Amino acid sequence: MVAKFSKLKAIVAATCLTALISLAPQVEAQVAKTETDLLAQLADADPKDAVAIDRALQAIWRKSGSPAMDFLLQRGLDALERGEPRMAVEHLTALTDHAPDFAKGWYERARAYFTVGLFGPAVADLERALTLNPNDYNAIFALGTMFEQFNDPDRAYEAYQRAQAIHPHHEQITSALERLKDTVEGKEL
Image (tube, rainbow, N blue to C red; front, top):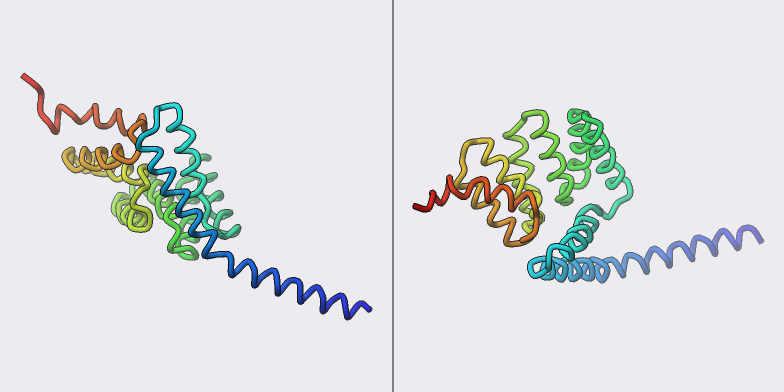
């Protein structure tokens, strides 16, 4: 009797796994549709609604599809929050090694690299993150910040404008554009 239940459990598990695997493309397509819809809404949202839409997008972008990779991301974020950027780099490097198509991992490692003053690797990771997710306005903003760090206000301003086109109510982007406007566009006489 026990052997029959063991076989039955194996059959049920295999059936469930097959069903999940067959649903994966449909779930992926739904997430992509949701992300596209949210990005369209964000561009036209009022400031209050933009906050909720931003949170929803960040929640989507934060999911790697693997609990183990999500755990590595969280470990890296926790290390950054504790002021341990070198430890964050280690966790996030493990994440990017094991999930090279997960844009958020590259973005967060770029933040960690920036914090420890490794600007070249930070830029490379931002470029990778933006290759994987060209709509990540936080990564575009970070790239603009890097350009400012390199004393290239024109490219920084261009990056901030690109980020603002996606998220018009992002306060840091708006502040950065205001800060650089006179430098880039010149003062009105």
